[in-house]
Length: 163
Image (cartoon, rainbow, N blue to C red; front, side):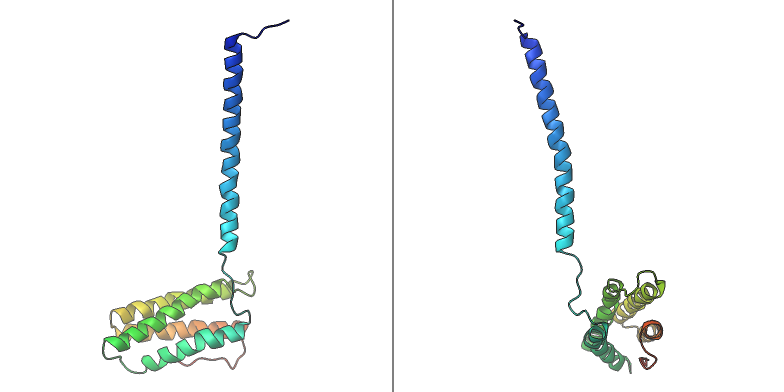
């Protein structure tokens, strides 16, 4: 009968523990990835209104109309500028929402227009924060052109916005 020495037994135990530790580390590396994936799915951007016409009518149209009215003449007073900044920020951030709603991911026109709305809307927002009417108006007109370009490409010809 063979006897195993104490040193061999200790080495075997240590080897077993080391293997178990490596297994724990390796499997723990996968758990956070799965957890991260689950969290990502749980918090994914999801449209509340799936119909683009309805989305535009309830999200963009009222905000655009308020901003157009606010910029019809130079805003006077802190509150008036705050309204311009608020509506410009909503429209600019709406560009991000449009990026998540692309009807055709192979067509760069949608992403380009959505990014343009976000960019020019953010310039309107910053100009309003600085109470710079001329720049706000300039960037607002460029933002509206981005909207009209998108309408020409994806909407109907009668969807022309006036700055």
